[in-house]
Amino acid sequence: GQNIDQPTEMTATEGAIVQINCTYQTSGFNGLFWYQQHAGEAPTFLSYNVLDGLEEKGRFSSFLSRSKGYSYLLLKELQMKDSASYLCAVRRGNDYKLSFGAGTTVTVRA
Amino acid sequence: GAVVSQHPSWVICKSGTSVKIECRSLDFQATTMFWYRQFPKQSLMLMATSNEGSKATYEQGVEKDKFLINHASLTLSTLTVTSAHPEDSSFYICSASYTPGELFFGEGSRLTVL
Image (cartoon, rainbow over all chains, first blue to last red; front, side, top):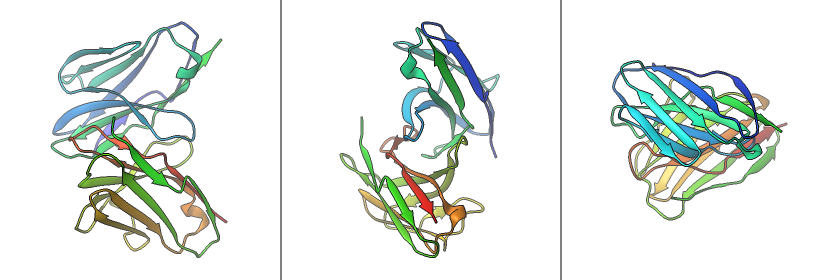
């Protein structure tokens, strides 16, 4: 099995920065994904890391350390529309399927 | 990005009836599709992997006779919840991929069983 842990909730103010951590334990690790999910909607893809380091995409960045089984998603210049659940997901081996963490609900306040 | 369409978005049914949910990849061929279930404020739980032209692979604890999956073509997979009961009420989401790893999700189907 795979243990994927991320905080349940985080709150931040508009314009601020928030970092969502994700730790995982799995054999055959082959990539970590971050998805955004607004309430009542399906998840949308944010980022993908398979090698160590930082991937930057506009206001969102994702970091991976394979030796530590650790990733974070960094959201900068927070906007109200960023209020959502953020899901960390791990790919194992050559599977197409992913295993998801429980999600972190981020609330952005004015 | 690739588009996955799911239908219906909302369905309400009586206990004991069966409900079919469709998942279509609109602009790519998906040999593999996945069906997830999500309870409120919980994560996505993989139910089964749907393979075109063959039987679905179910995750442990998921009743294959309860949740029938058919993947008749490269662009369509269906999930049928048979003899639905209130405990089957949930958000069902399908996903598909044409490259390993990156999943494209359907809009989700919210099932309410009365």
